Picture: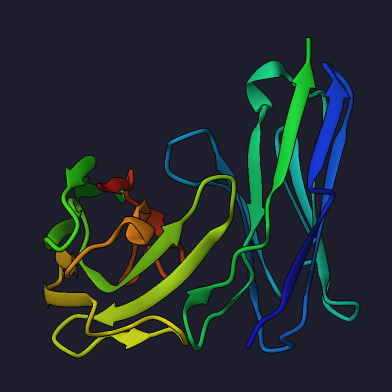
Length: 112
Length: 117
């Protein structure tokens, strides 16, 4: 099965700084790479995703980069704001199996 | 679009009773629904995958006789926790993925917090 490692487990940044979270996976069949944001007691929300035929994708302050050879992908948040504070999960997927395997999560705290 | 609802949002029950949780896709047909469990400050763990009209596929270590899953239609899946015990207390979240236009993206329900006394 898929083995997913996510780092760091906690990340504290000052408002306006950038944050980077890295996810490493083991299954070479994985071809869909989403990032989810979860606020306390709420559902995970998809914030950005990338497929294996693309190396980078950007959506305003959020970007995801993928290195399929090294089997890792990263979430980049620029100009962080206090409302970015949440837990972020990577969840690579083998679209043949259609099951997400969640990383352990990164608690991001943006200090105003 | 792509809204998933869950009911109830929270439930408290006595040990030994059964609890049913519903997951509905409101504006799309969900060919596949997934059930996850999340303990406090932990990640989401996939429990089972269900396809409409067929038996659910359970992850290793998940008791299929304890966590009964039914996916009778393209918009509804239910999870029944049978003979619940305090260790079953958790946050249960469903997700759904559908047909063309949504593809592999999973949309999550708001979750159900189960507390077993």
